[in-house]
Image (cartoon, rainbow, N blue to C red; front, side, top):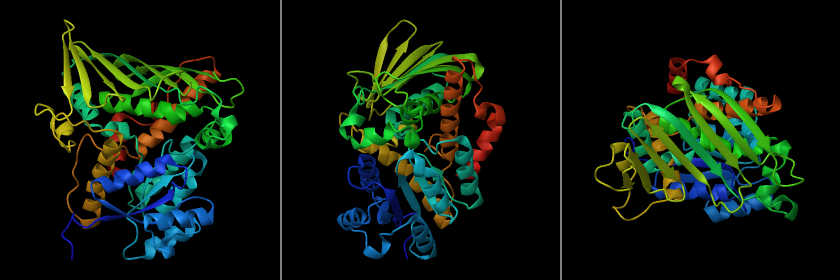
Length: 404
């Protein structure tokens, strides 16, 4: 018999078949630290394609299922059934798939946005809690070591009181009408029936918004948003600018775009405090730039012995060996594995302040999308997001603990 916290976790996946880069990313990340064994799945709507992918991945034929109900029922009944299922499908299918597994007490990692509306997102949070399952959302930029360093510095007051936050996820990946040329990702991400009409907010804006919340620990109390479509003929909004008022009347700005011509990934955050400021960019993820009142600049590097433990514990190799996106994704899965194993084996939960995003973060992200859309509809009128109205900070904290 395996010792507690040592036996591999069994994973399943829905989606992530041929042409789905995010599926490969999840699989690479799960394998990196050896915590998971992918043993079951449905790897696409086409049965023959799903079967071919299952063979490639070493999934046995009897665990390559034809539909989610059959997979959930069979895996819940097995002694060696899946501990967690990854939902790596387009937005419009997230709710039914995730709910089906959560109802069986099977934990779920669901791609963002969690669902297409806050009512269904809240339903997933409720179902997870009622069935003692974990619901996690892979906002994996929060799992970079230097993002954890930034979050610890801000939360420990090293910048002093926060005065302004500027965050952007401005990519140029769809600055041309790729959807008209058969581009698989562009085709569904620009389809309002699948991605929702404020597509860029759900796809990129939720990442930027979560990064802002994660590093600062602040919530949006109200916001004013404006949506645009830059590429002629596109059926969804591909650019968004949002002004926010955070906890304590701290102002912030968020820009999300899939049509920022020439930008690669385009994720950046700057936090300005009364004592200093910091900046982190995804395309140079192993550095964190910190400036003091006089403008003196310090570059903190992934692997330095002087970093906070929140960052150091995520370092696999020594100073001077940069780690990147797959490693950050793997950090998300390692944090999740700690909790999954503790719950499975009846041992103490790690209780980390800075850990993986849960269904609560996914719900807040969907509510953010809705608030931006509502504001735009009323000529950028200020809106109070649903999470700021319905739950106080202590209530959100209690709900998050219940989900984990």
